[in-house]
Image 1 (cartoon, rainbow, N blue to C red):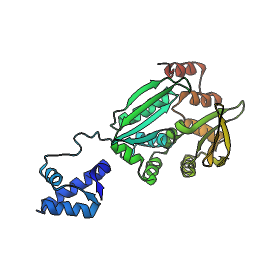
Image 2: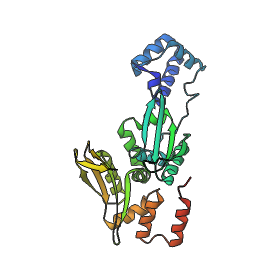
Image 3: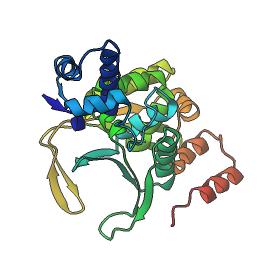
Image 4: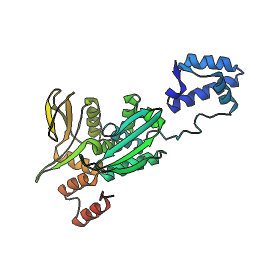
Amino acid sequence: MRKLRELAPWEIERIQSRARELRSHNISYSKIKESIADEFNVSVSKATVLRWCNGTHNTFNKTKRVNLEPSPELAYIVGAYLGDASVSERNYQYRIRLKVIDRDFAQSFERALRTMGANPRTGFERNRGRANRWWVEVTNKELFMFLKGPKERLFEVAGAYPKEFLRGFFDSEGSAIVYPNRARVEASNYDLEILELCKELLERLGIHSKIYKTKRKGQTVVIRGKEYRYNSDLFTLRIYQQDSVYRYTVEVGFSIQRKQILLLQHFKLLKHDDTKSFENTTKSTP
């Protein structure tokens, strides 16, 4: 039997609504308690049911609600979450966190959270052993439960707003690689299903891509002088046909301007003065 504190806010909202509906039919509080246990597999006290029905208690008075209806902002958050962002729970504190080297990426993530109704915190972390990083953090059970929920729901949001989802994912996992006469965009992930979704959404936008297995489970790699072994296969999605790279640049692009500038310059879509303007607005020294 589940407890209320284990549920997502939208589930509790449904249970509250059901309790009030039953009470409107003059069903006793004890019977409502039993019905909720049967219908939702949730243990709730008779006293809580009474307070709900009498309007003397609202579970959400102290809960910061966010808009989880499909939107461009939620799609961007989902894309970033399936890449670099992380979630954690400790002592019933439900945290979503992004830590990145690019200030403009952190700002895009923060703006999306605020538009959805969240109240994120931001900061800058200096680290001698690694690159300095910007971080964005929000404590919100509703968003946490959504991101940790069924992957199908995340994919539905991605499908509703493919450009924003792809931008969030490629901001997290993507690279822009430019040669004198060619350019490509790629993103790597251990979850093949996520890359297959990206490939499908890119195709909907007329962008051709291909998925490769670039590292095998058990293969070794040296990072900062230490040898590590891959625990899983690593896959890479590549956009390499030049008309598709161009379409990605203008249709999706990066929020991270140092990557976007490379592509814009390659396709001669950015003048020198525009480059200076971009650089001035994206300096990351705090």
